[in-house]
Length: 195
Image (tube, rainbow, N blue to C red; front, side):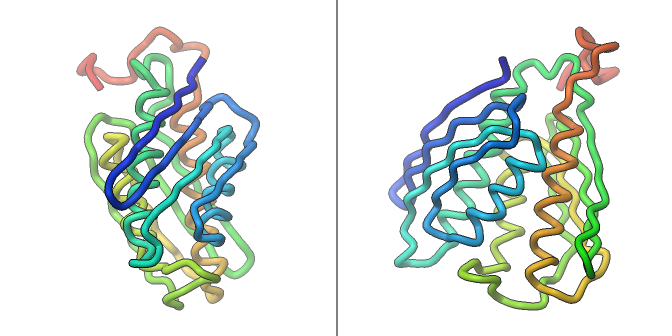
């Protein structure tokens, strides 16, 4: 079973996370930032993950610590749940249309952390969420998961749809990357024999 649970506690945040990579898209999320909760719910649903995440952060300061630390916790949880990575597809990509928007995501659980975020959200806030923190979230995930994460907003008008299409594209690419390949179930997806 590719499940894990973790607790990450700092002076700024306290995060408790349960994750099942082979889930049904069920989630229970509470970060204190409602729109961010909605985006994490999108990751669970469209990524086929079961995720319970409770985060308490210093939101009286701002949202940065909470958003970044959730990215770290989620990356660590995915990396742990993947275990040896034998039999996974390793890489995944997806183009996500959402009405006026189109977003692209590509992920590779290569063991090397790298993140490229090629998007500019047209509004500084969507709901109660500071959109500039999206890059911090995805960079934190990439480093903690030791993964390549490339995200691009191809086009779009609505800032709500811009953000949501990027999170959904990420979720779908994640789902493909962590999927087990039945034909290669005992094979490490690397000619180096190390990930």
